[in-house]
Image 1 (cartoon, rainbow, N blue to C red):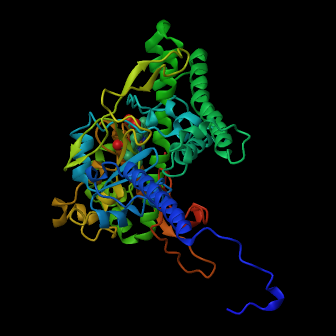
Image 2: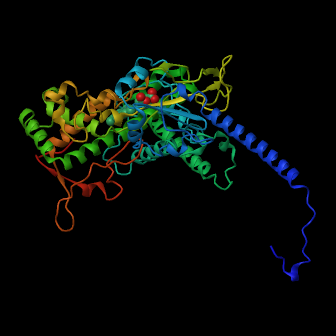
Length: 513
Ligand code: HEM
């Protein structure tokens, strides 16, 4: 190169011999690259430690594991796609949590029912359990005592416009669904976030949790206070709370009273939203499938007649209505992904399902809290005690079972006859799985069966359920669309008020008492 004279004063600085420069940088670079590779491999190995022992699942990324695959929400729709790729038992993990999703009834029965001793706990969800204090009611209580009675507080709600109960239960349904929403709260994975001060930017979740705590407090306390007041006034009716308080009599301790309060609240919160969701889905199906409704009307008119409401004893003589109820349960199981937890090592179909780690029940010192026993981590000798994945959250995906083509050919079709004709031998009654499994199976099953049978037959015997019309007078044919809550309801609710989705016109004189 010719250097122009004007800049010829620029001279190259004296340099170390080329060879030594290159030796220095290459060796440094080499060490750095090797170090980084080893660190990355170690981190990857740590995250995928033993992953071959687990059921198949989407590949994991370093640090975040399967966070990108984790569904936010209750229905976990994309699991259907995941199951097509990885098979019926799918595994995935995010920092601090491991999940197994069971898509087939056979596996859910094998684990939740036949090995119920291992799979009956509830996982710890930090936002719901600790920050919002939802651990106190039975659905999420790790020491569940299933107590079912028809009337919990002995109070009257129906027909009273200004009753606080509907609002309380609405708040509770929202709180439960949102606080424990899968994938929604980072604090469920990173529990140290619970120590972030409330005022800290981004700590909105703590402020929300505070609000929920006070709503939960009102929900559990107020109905109990009212029941006790009625007992004092001598106007109390027999119900779960009154029976239990009377039973305890003078030996009632404050702690015992707290247990009654929370057991009652568990029934209250577990029962209201699920049953009302079932009825809205039933109304949606009747609106969309008028032929089914017509057949149900015919059966009711033939068996019960038109001069009285149906009674429980009519139910065995109404097989078509019973299959309508089964098909409503099947077409969209009302309650979505409620996980169980397992803490003990177990092998199923060649895969290990948990680290050998277990929690022991130890006496806590907080005698004034409702549940003085606390779960304390107690590693056994030789156990894995690292920061990752202390146990598995394991869910039977009811919606996958309800779409199983062997049990239900053409599963997307709403067809109650599948439980009556030649297909009936394979058509498993969905009530086997829509209420959950094993020891955590819904304790409200019998109550729901009775409530649903009476409500569905009463509505159908009194009303024609008709489609709404748009501004041009055309019928609106609703889609089978559901929202993404813990309990899914008719998904049209958000768009327009339910009353415009269906019309109930009176078929016969009278009303539903
Ligand atoms: C359509 C009606 C209902 C459906 C579909 C339903 C479904 C479920 C499901 C799937 C579970 C979780 C089971 C599991 O983890 O394996 C559950 C739990 C529970 N349900 Fe229901 N349920 C209904 C009605 C009721 C009623 C009427 C009550 C109370 C009167 C109730 C009280 C509870 C309680 C307390 C739990 C928690 C049980 C525990 O954690 O041990 N449910 N329900």
